[in-house]
Image (cartoon, rainbow, N blue to C red; front, side):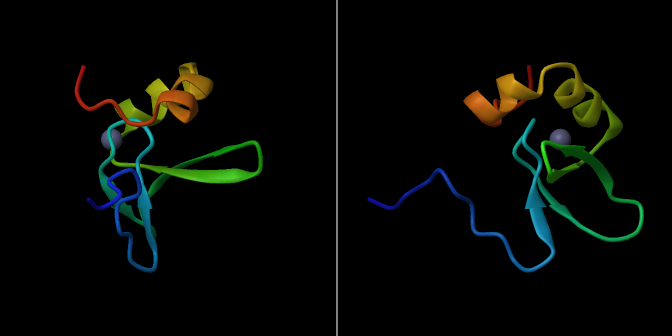
Length: 66
Ligand SMILES: [Zn+2]
């Protein structure tokens, strides 16, 4: 059995903590700094969701569409 909790991310890739999508950093990347960490998001919607309740996503991880 392989560990599934950490997707393999390449250099410059980050996981959207809200939906679990891989987001590439660079121009136009949607980010949010929270507690000295920069989080990357696939969309404004995910950024806003994280902003509303960051602890929920950090605690539970990406939960997919809901
Ligand atoms: Zn997302």
